[in-house]
Length: 120
Length: 108
Image (cartoon, rainbow over all chains, first blue to last red):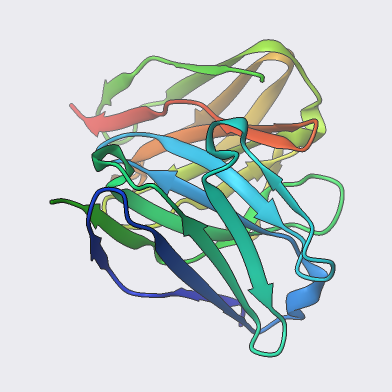
């Protein structure tokens, strides 16, 4: 079965960076884009960007350009999202999600989420 | 960037009642690229509807989606206890995805 398993909770300081991982299993990792979506406590969903695991090509939301880097390691079927210059409002849950590979571009499988807390 | 506005923010209904959720886009969205998700506390979102009106695998037929252009609707025909949750619409366009702010369906 398809699974996306994310790394655990992170606690970090303002100005630092965080790197969250998303390990895929149960499907061909290079066959599907991986997206990153975040959610502040009690708030809605915010799309951050996506990576093509085959080529490493990325599309980032304008809001995060310059601060986010998405990478992948195809040898271990894992995608990564690194966010730099962290602020207190980056204290959110980060999700990875798989994009459907056909016509509709929806997200059919999601990771369990990773809470990142930014606090001095 | 296309902005999606969902209404109402909160819907207070009783089990067995019909729920109608609205999602309005700031500009026209291809129906192929409009999806709905359900999210329960502490869980990741779950895909309900894609292509504006197609149910995802395993989604009960009490969930239905409709609409086109800038106006889309998610309808839950008869609310079951497990349907009380937050619902998000999502669109794709020009290599960018956006979500609505969500509608919470709560027990009255």
